[in-house]
Image (cartoon, rainbow, N blue to C red):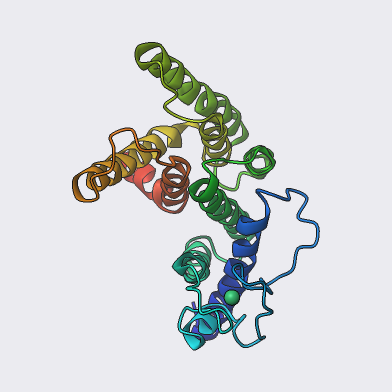
Length: 255
Ligand SMILES: [Zn+2]
């Protein structure tokens, strides 16, 4: 990648991240995203208007040192992490797949996963309008053989849903508690559609591994309860994204 292309893709990624922040904040209460102002034009605490310079991704946050200029309330660090993260994600995706239809569809999946993670972290919900639309888009991308084949995609969607739904039903019978939400099943179905059935073991292993390490850490250091709620969606999303980018390399190395 030339440095000009790198700067361009990073800038597009930052702009995308600032848009995704708005979607994460608005979608749970307004799924039609009516009146979508982009980028966020008001302070979430005092509703004061944000100046255009402060709206710039990452730079704006640094300029006002992470605080609203009017009410001095801190601005969530996650806004900046999502902006910077989206830029990094865009660079990695385009570097891996190029500016091709497969690269653009991978970027689209990445955007869906970022929004789903943010919303799950805030609300413990994975909205159907994202998981189901993501599932259909995954099947469509498979008809173009972007990241998997149509057969792999259909089997992946069906099995992704059933495996988690089955595990959850078993867990419920044993413990009387819901281990996961239905949104998690649909998210794994969506990842199955995008990545194919052969990618599911890697996705589940990475997600469960990451989630377990995190939960143990939280119990040991933050003394959180064993049963404290933890969103599993972000782990599935990260695991799916890692498999999207590097999964083919593992498969060719093993196979
Ligand atoms: Zn404010």
